[in-house]
Image 1 (cartoon, rainbow, N blue to C red):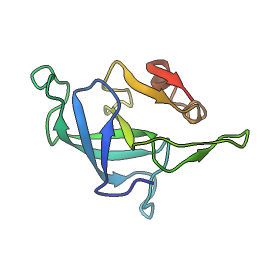
Image 2 (image 1 turned 135 degrees about the vertical axis):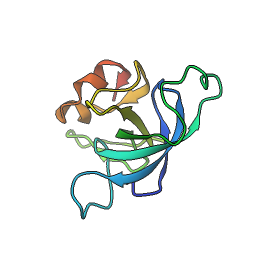
Image 3 (image 1 turned 135 degrees about the horizontal axis):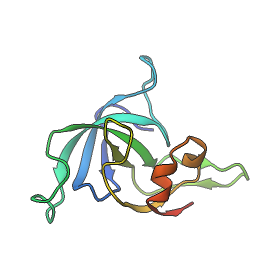
Image 4 (image 1 turned 90 degrees about the horizontal axis):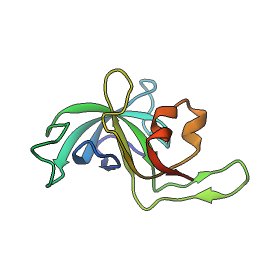
Length: 126
């Protein structure tokens, strides 16, 4: 579960390394975000190799889609899956991904939530 001021890793090649959650989208009383939710984030760190060619800059504000959480999620067949880190993918204002590639697997739950663009550029599905 992700809430305000949570530090998250970035799972794409946009140039950002870590981001901080500013706001959880989806209603004014919503405090926590889970897998597949949208949040507003601020870039905290950039990757060392791509500081000059980065698509993002430090302290810029973006929307992000949560693709991995430490809290497990249940699959329809009864199995539950866990990830070792909380990570997101950055989104621009039009709702498209900032990056061209997502590193690591993405859960199939995102297919039901109409995020087909993110599944097509990801490394694999769980």
